[in-house]
Length: 149
Image 1 (cartoon, rainbow, N blue to C red):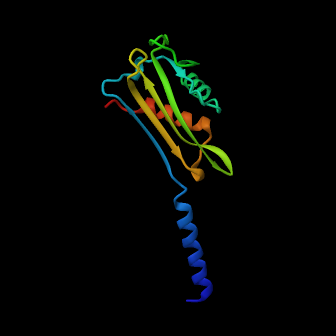
Image 2: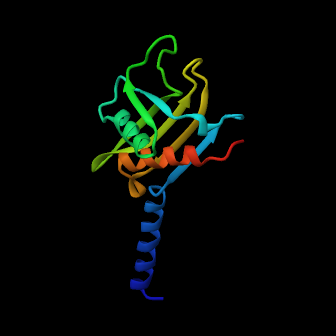
């Protein structure tokens, strides 16, 4: 085997090894046993105090596109949200040439007792990154299509 072929093969193997760790994605969703999401029509998205990317508004917009009513605001006391469910979210951002959303977790909760009734997660590294809007859409669609346990 010639030196050029060996160098070419090594270059390909090195490129594969370096890129394989960066191409990870995951999308999951689950519901609490006995949960019936069909009955839920209105949501209150609780704004995270450090949200500088308006993820709360993205969630509100996606819920609206899906035919639900959604309000956005700060956390309230005493379950006074006046909706069928509350929405809490955690977003993680990463830098790779630009800032991008690495992970998003959305949890639907019973407003009366804050019990989690459904949760979805989306995780996309740099090579499989999605826009924040697409990640919100992916998580919410997965939550609502998840079969009851």
